[in-house]
Length: 108
Ligand code: FES
Image (cartoon, rainbow, N blue to C red):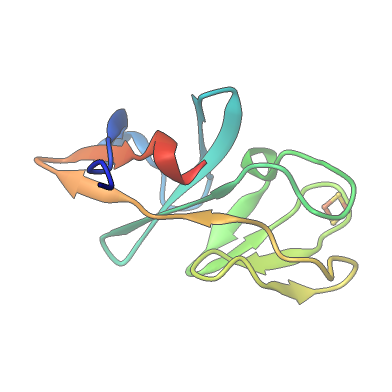
């Protein structure tokens, strides 16, 4: 029998700036949170190109720009959309309840 997923509160919706990713840590993973058009997204914080922190960069809409070399990712899919990034970053399901943001350790 499969156990139900567990969820951990990691932030409040209002903590997440509209242009700077918000860094949280869960189970030793560094995760970037974004808020676009009222929806919260979560990706790995680490750029797949050379391991810069995406939370030191900025995002506009669905596109986050890495601060080190300017590579870009779509925060909905994790797909690399601008060189020099070619490999995707991981994305994680997000749950929002009463303005609280939850991630599941089961997804990490
Ligand atoms: S480290 Fe992110 S684009 Fe190079």
